[in-house]
Length: 101
Image 1 (cartoon, rainbow, N blue to C red):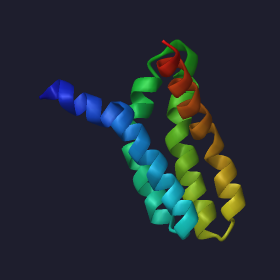
Image 2 (image 1 turned 60 degrees about the vertical axis):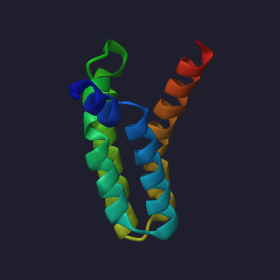
Image 3 (image 1 turned 90 degrees about the horizontal axis):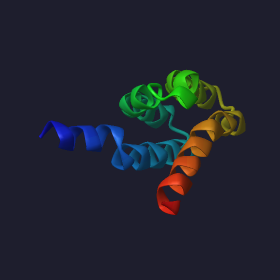
């Protein structure tokens, strides 16, 4: 049971759901979806911050999502999209690593 919850909240289901929430938030111009994505990315970011390569980035990812939500609420849609690029880069990098093995 605990392993299943860990997989759901720290694994690919969480990553995919956060990505969908972020895209939906940008397209529909709803910062609430980005805040929800920032809350859902917390366990994944905590897990990611335990690796030596992503110690600092793991803690910054939820803050970037919250910053994107703030900018989206102020009407700066493209700047909010720029703040989501580091998360997208991490997800793509992890997908390449997983799929290449």
